[in-house]
Length: 371
Ligand SMILES: [Zn+2]
Ligand SMILES: [Zn+2]
Image (cartoon, rainbow, N blue to C red; front, side, top):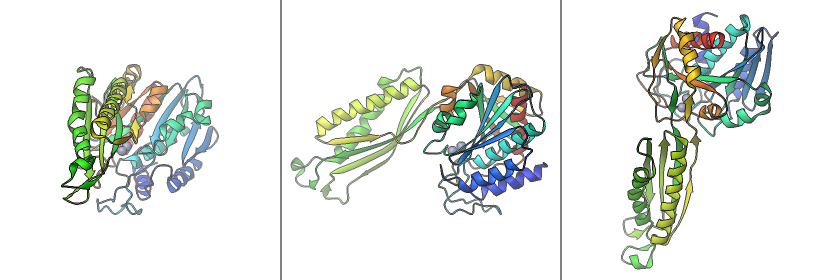
């Protein structure tokens, strides 16, 4: 395949972004390509809207797993590119179109020049939500292949093309959404004593929740609770019976996440008593931290040293990635691939440089062969 052919595939995929577990056209497109490869040593197993592709190695002592995510986001594209999304209000705004193309590129190379190890390619749906990593990991095909380790990449808009970066230990944080509803009794603005004012209850929560982080989390670890949205009331002279706050929790270790959630619940129990109300808490989508194995990061570094790609040390980020669930069960790592985009991930103008596709293929193949 020439680089133009990878660009064509990337652009085809870019035009059909689909949300989690609805990746029907994407799956069909991937399957059509994968079935066009020599089939002698490969086994294709569709799973939900994703796919497992197993390539038998020449010796087969170990099985290496490589994962790509395949879903898009509910964002209306504003790049004005000639190959813009054809799905209204949907966009590959997290670079998963590049991720898939790189996986197809690595698969093609591996099929034509089989390595000693077996290789299992995971085309995983629903990374952005509701979460495909956990069910894919628990699925029958995954359990039967039992890979020795797993790795993945993510495009990095801030990284220059030609570079990859990673680090041992924490790469991405534990994250959780946070939705809290407060239910009391509304009434006339002039008769507050006859009401249970949920504006007050939600405000008290907002003020006190920051102490949760300050007092409950080990100062040598990091945690942040941010409330980004608050809703209450209908008009200036009615005391609201309901209020809602929405936010996110991010921590650099799993215990702190548990501690923060417990503290929020204790705080809410106190608010219920003090303001005579009921509260409900919903943690929405959660991601487990991406915690890289030092040994595999080192092997990756050594594999990259033999290529034209430049390795850089990354910093940990407070963003989330559901690949963390795979690393909870299997050794392995994730790395960033520089794609040099002026606009960042999850924006309507993300525009990764397509030259990065071949860099990604080279890095993934090098790890599979050397790592
Ligand atoms: Zn994303
Ligand atoms: Zn992503």
